[in-house]
Image (cartoon, rainbow, N blue to C red; front, side, top):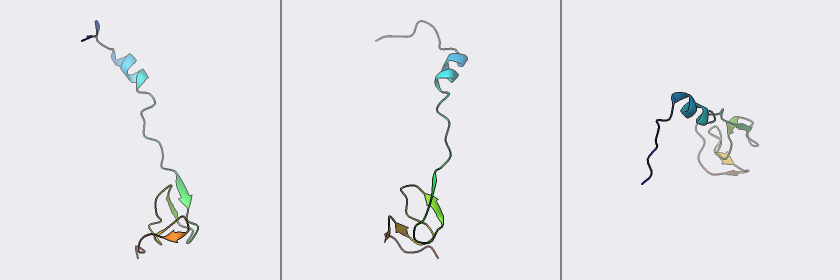
Length: 59
């Protein structure tokens, strides 16, 4: 098996990982109640997803 001849420096390691940061969550407006919810997730306020009810309302 191949082994590295030299240790990877911290600078080189961190340059490679420059794009590993967590990005902000994209929010969408619910078409039923107008509340903000995460993309591809059911609305926590009313329980609707893509125009139909998929779970009971939270309140």
